Amino acid sequence: MTDKPIIQEKLKQAVGLLVEQNIDCWITFVRETSQVHDPVLDLILGFGLTWESALIVTRSGAKIAIAGRFDAQSIRDMEAYDEVIAYDQGIAEVLKARITQLNPSNIALNYSLSDPSADGLTFGMYAKLTQILAGTPYAGNLVSAEGVLRRLRERKTQTELARVKTVVGITEQVYAELFATPLRGMSEIQIHALCGDLAAKYGCGFSWDRVDNPIVNAGPNSSIGHGIPSTLVVEAGQLLHLDFGLRLDGYSSDLQRVAYVPRPGETAIPEEITRAWKACWSALEAGRAALKPGVQAWQVDAAARGELVRNGYPEYMHAFGHHVGRNAHDGGSVLGPRWERYGDMPFKEIDTGSIFALELGTMVAGYGYVGIEENVVVTPTTAEYLSQPQYELILLP
Image (cartoon, rainbow, N blue to C red):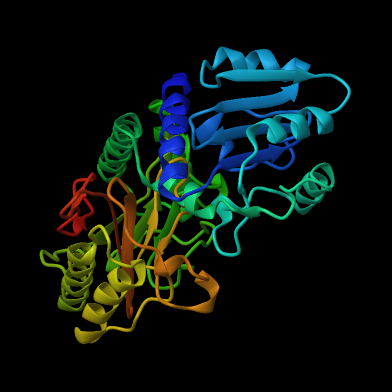
């Protein structure tokens, strides 16, 4: 599936964001992107570039690409840029002349102290640009494009939303087929491999590194978090937890599911597990209820975190939620606590159209990990599930 419609939609969206944020000119300045990839290229171009290139968007609506001659035609074929300027010997004079013609009062660049998806400009390319602009009034008017990039990722178009819904549905189908399989006695490694076979069946890739996608946790001795699947096997009287994300047509999913493996003759799930399950769901719903446009991201996390603690469980040592889109962790902001490691990302306001993975969990002594993760989209009044929530624990056949 071509990304041309999305590239065109996102560039149109970018113009509106520049107006909204009072930015005259936004430049994405890159080279050899197969080695150092600026994340925003996925949204505004859809492929890599070789020579030094500048993708320029202005608040007046101009969309200009300056690139090496052998990249220029591919950019024209996207039909997304009004002007494509090809060069041979060097970009400096061409870029300087075009910026002078635009005469912007400020220029936004892709750097950020907190958001990795807005920090694609390398130091070398920043230094190169300041050399090009030396002696002009523009060298002192460089600002961060973080706000533009954040909103560009968060405000999903209808095309983007449809793609996420599709891959979420496929992920749920893979889970259904997986849990219909006799998993007792299988190792984490074997289940990891089986998920790979099912993903291939549906023509999907993985929304993070394959080595720990899915994360598979069999019982209480498994490595929770981003652990690599091990030789531990699925045994009776334990929990089986998976964290799995697929990627299709450039967009991602990220869902967790949990099953209990009954002992011989056991017909009910142990009370310790059901109590933890209910507490986790109460906390996730408290966070989802707080997830509305205009709310600061940390407040959503605080609602979920506080509810889990009130129910007698320890707070989780990660953020409650993260954006999902081009990647499983899609940047922009994070529904996390006001910890140093998250920088200023928890202080960002929630925006309509954002897609989040909401996740939390707790260990149940002797049984394993109870983890919940669902995908939601923020509407003007609430956060709606894109996934079919796992309200009940799965009993493994």
